[in-house]
Image (cartoon, rainbow, N blue to C red):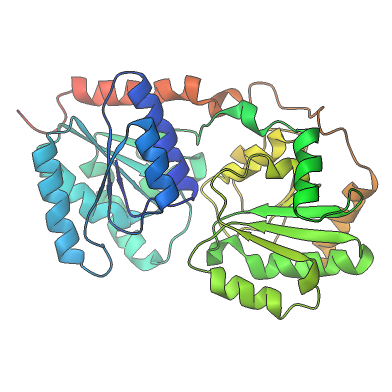
Length: 364
């Protein structure tokens, strides 16, 4: 697996979840990282039996990174090199993998937007030519990177059971965080990046709080935008009712402490936290730009970002006025099966086997 960083974000979760499942089925997995590594993810990888190798930083030592990547792929004699990314910017890694000693090259798109849209448009036509198999976290992400080329949707799967609503955990966590039982908690779990749209999230909460003073906004996550988000919170008139919990390795029980989930992302590959939130029985108020593949229940409420914060707050207020049984969520027929890693894993393994059966691109 080749990733830019190994941190507590969507790609990090997917890479380690599938890597652990590959190992459980008798395979060996090495993750090559060209950027930041968080200690928690390194520890998680070690527990799963995943080998992590940190290469020179792709951004500060680009040439050193490319040389180290080629060396690692040649010396590792891997069957498959699976490159993860968000755009056509995976092109250099794919070229290096194609010219290395690996048998088959896979690419995996995790988003529908990027920081360098012009370069993406220039490079994306070359991506299918360099791959033996292509994956995407959603149909939208697949179209974004591969266009009309053939690809497989590989869901961001995980252990579904751990996110079910837990009344005991709700009570314990609210006591731990000093939240009264009747306080209404709006939640958000996301990497603190610009595309997650935290400024608008804070505006939505301010509008909601004006009508519901006994409310709290709980923001879970860390990342490069943490300083900016903290500054926004500090300057907000409702700052005393906003909780910045930082990076939490396993936020599964926190969903039980929340009363709704607000996710106004500017763009998303899928938004796996929305699946987690729905599993916990939360009404989810999401940007209409989030792929519909994240809709697995009747508690998914898409709202255009063109609508003002007060309009979002009004929709949340309507739901707050009619609370629903958190343990009785109506999931769409068959919607959750694809997010169960025990079943979706076979999509990955099958694609690997097909690529290898075709001989990949090299002769050994």
